[in-house]
Amino acid sequence: MIELYQFPRSTCSQKVRLAAAEKGIELIDRIVDADRAEHLSEWYLKLNPNGVVPTLVHNGRVVIDSSVINEYLDEAFPEKPLVPRDIYERARMRAWRQYIDEVPTTAIRPPSFNAFIMRRWATRSDEEWEAHKARLPLRKHFYQRMTREGFPKRYIDEAKERLRQTVQRMERSLAGGPWIVGEMFTLADIGLIPTIVRMDDIGLAPMWSDLPRVQDWYRRIQARPSFDRAFYPGSRVQGATC
Image 1: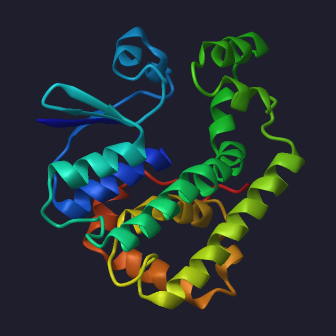
Image 2: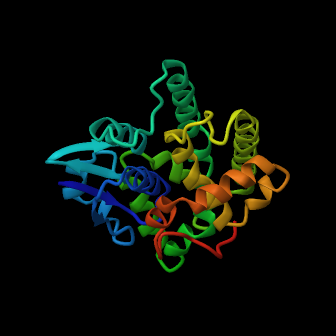
């Protein structure tokens, strides 16, 4: 039995859903209620002490962190591999994975929060807001950078600069093959997809309007059967603006 505890709109949850869909793995969907902060509840923190999603439970064993989960799935279910066999290509993929985790995965959060997450707090008190931040085991300091109105402009500008760097790097890398690390579709492509989709959803697609390889990559990504399985109705935030 393979269970995925997740938020439908979480980019990290989307990343795991994409990998599972590519590999044909059936997941038991365990939706964690974000509005009720269920990810900070006692029962969930026993599964994932970081208080974030996603969390994978495979035959009773817990695996956390979306990048770790995807590598775990690839090793546990070696059919339809998403990691190159060649040691050099595998190193290139892992260098991208590291970059993805450090740069676009974190950069997309401030504009995402400003675009739609802060709406949840529009009718709540300052006391509730401060109490929520105090409960966070992993991202307390991230939340402390924002106000009830969201992230200040300087943080949004910094995030956009890092996202622009990401798509420019993608453009250069895609010159070497149809996918991010060459001929093979890998976890590097999967790691980038949720950020690109989120950028599209919150009005940042013009960032790659001058990058034809990124445009072509994104069109081909959306044509893959895994895309609709991972981005099912209600799991995107179209129409939001940052």
